[in-house]
Length: 169
Image (tube, rainbow, N blue to C red):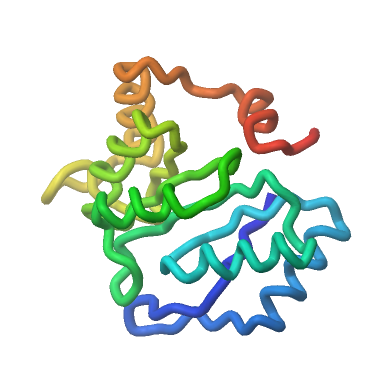
């Protein structure tokens, strides 16, 4: 699996620049190498760009989307935005949410009963709670795993995760 961002967006003081030419190049390369793309979505329009890649045959359904919300300068980490994005993807797609900073926990907690998957860890957030640094990635993962179990969502084994995502060993 490899990440494919399907658009350009502001990212704090920087810009993630991805021209259509670059996006299609990486999509072709992933397709030719049988690498399953994780479509990283920072803005709503990136979903439409991904769907155009499906129409061109550069992405093979089911598509896996990763909604990265709360990046300064990109789509906010609001539950309403997550709902809109989930409703905008094709039936049968899988999806993950990654909330940045203070958005990590509320978005994760909403994604679980919605049937989505969750990305947590230091890449996105270093706090366990307001003002308290997390001690490890494991601490953040253990919390969300506990919450998932409370909702009746067992944690997938590596083989189960590959099956969910349509990735072969």
